Length: 257
Image (cartoon, rainbow, N blue to C red; front, side):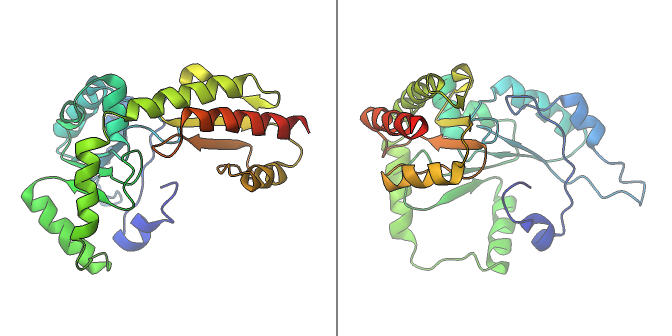
């Protein structure tokens, strides 16, 4: 809804029904139940899916627990509505909670996750579900031109990621916490370091010309700034603890200047 250019509506004929979430990205199960439309009333669209995200990007990479997922799943199953988990960064949640991914998604009907975010592949995502679901997903992929030829060499990178890049996500979380704490000591930056749970660091910037500030940072190799008040920095395999120190030093000097 936020970042896909209205694709679900334009390509799938899907209408959204948004349910407010808390600061972790969790939604009240009672609110979900209330949002399910009465399909016997022909004025209403049919509720076809409940979607959750873990970790929750716009809430700062906060994690949802197996109990959170179970609570929403009970509503979904009670109303015969499928539950999908957008797990773009589900392995970050798994590492943070020290809980296997299977425990975080066992109550879902379908799951998607990215190989190209924290797991550091050059490209790729995976969608998981029943055989029937995957067959339909493949058909829809073909309809929108998403099929690829000779893609095995890229898929091979995904195997490497799943075999060797999961446990090291804890390093990204440590670097993100270090970055958040350092940012909290800079004048003009507003951030709650305690809210940073994984590898996403959101903060507000009070500066007369944020676009110019972003350009200054980019000229010194630091990306992530913009003209918006709220910025997002992300730690990953290519960002070391020393890079965090460098970023804090350069940003501090730029804000002071």
